[in-house]
Length: 282
Ligand code: GDP
Image (cartoon, rainbow, N blue to C red; front, side, top):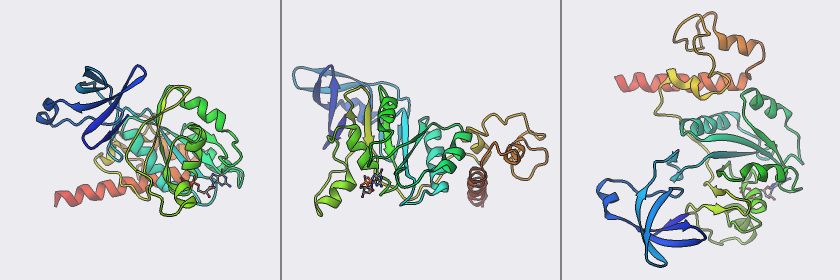
């Protein structure tokens, strides 16, 4: 559930055990992560982690294992959504084997059918909510049941407001409280919060940029769900979907089955990945 100063707090049945990791992990250079499923040995309230189960996913920033869903919170307005950043966050989740979901908050200020359209074409699940009016939040909470969900979003989008509703005010996160009592220190270690209805949520620190790296430019299309069925449908094998004729993706774009902003993100990241590779060769 959380780790502080070399201790790991492991939930088993309805108790929390304060555990150390067995020495063997250090030798094997494995560190338990928040979210790990583990076996422990215990003789009371304390124990030690003796086995870490294979991870379904593992994020580096923040370090957390077995996240099922990345809830990407954006605001309908203020701050205005940054589509390129949203696309990079979506790809990052896809690369890490985490299902991304988009949550448009502050829909009391503005409706965002445009964003709903872009991302429903991309086959993403979308929630439109207002934390302020508690509109749509029940539906969102229903979706979280029995999953481990990481909440991510630019600062100011209302992530803390949403997490507070979802956890009945129990999850102490950054922004709101920082504003209410200036100078109040809110701890920013990673911690899973267990929902009454089943499942876990966690907050991830605000971000303002993200680089997509460690994938090949030619694999990038796989992380765009609306492009992922393109294999063997273009005239050329290994089509990059940029300059080649008779390209299935270009057709999708012309038919309006893929949003221009998504395609622009694709080409921008593709070119960047290519140029980094060329540079590394030199
Ligand atoms: P965070 O930085 O993403 O954690 O955002 P906060 O939860 O701290 O919210 C940022 C600001 O947006 C605060 O002033 C909130 O009161 C406001 N806010 C949050 N949700 C909504 C909403 O649904 N509608 C409107 N109009 N304002 C909201």
